[in-house]
Image (tube, one colour):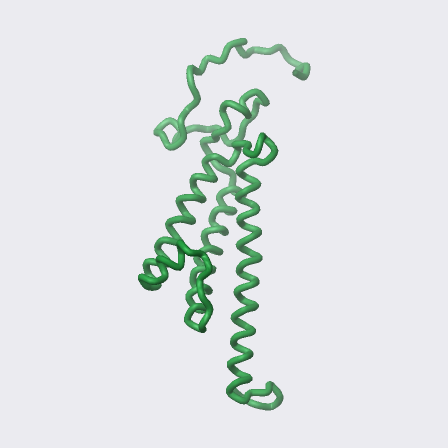
Length: 170
């Protein structure tokens, strides 16, 4: 432990009997924005107030997930198929169940990940926060891929209609 320039005023024993559970009244009105003490990082990884960066990460994931759902519906309408078996199952019931389940799964999982963002997994090598950032990155790549597919299909459809792109109007 590092030497502090002022006298230690904390008691040697922790006065808390057990950590505050997430999603309780006490946690909703807490003030803890980050984990200050190194020893708390392992047994008390929860915070009461989330950073703007963490909240925006979750919001962007949700927006990208909804965009993915709409792009998937458009691609399926143009002849593609959903390769995720679970989402394909809900797609057989129509667009609304598909969109609802995709949105609810994203929000519920995202909130669970946000609550546990300071937990370390895989033997303490990776934090859940890093998983959230990886999901954001993968959604960005997926959206770019879907946009590329949509542009290629649109170009193929225009070509099939005789549009060459040189002086022609669609």
